[in-house]
Length: 206
View (cartoon, rainbow, N blue to C red):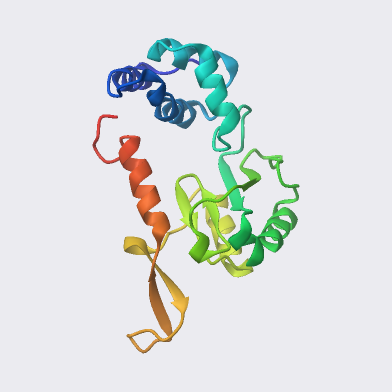
């Protein structure tokens, strides 16, 4: 089975002494492992536990509780459509059905070329911008069929679709610029930035 690279092992060991209780390091450590390997199989859970010097049950319990962790391989791009109340009321089911038709798979399945896995997710913290979908660490909000088409077309070319700059989205309304658009601050940007900092994507070692 695939083993973690020396770089990832070092980052996980660094986490071990950063928290007052080592079990608090399990969650970010598993994020590191999944980011590298794509999923968390039994051998990887045991390896992470050994690096943190905690019982294996602590890593298995975490992946059993949090839906963002995958026990089996997924496609190159994991499309997670929020299914919680706000998104459901704003048409999340229709978004899922549309993507199923576009990709020729059912929710929970991966396309034959291994590029896309379609999933439903619990609340992703963007209730004011429903319906929404997460692709990797990026949030795509106020989804329409046209936006879904644009996202899937870009991903098919292995290009990440652009997200709204500086945490702002354009929503139909009385914009100050006279163009019929209104800048709406996106709470999901704060979530992305927080996750990036926690996982060391902005210069923090861990």
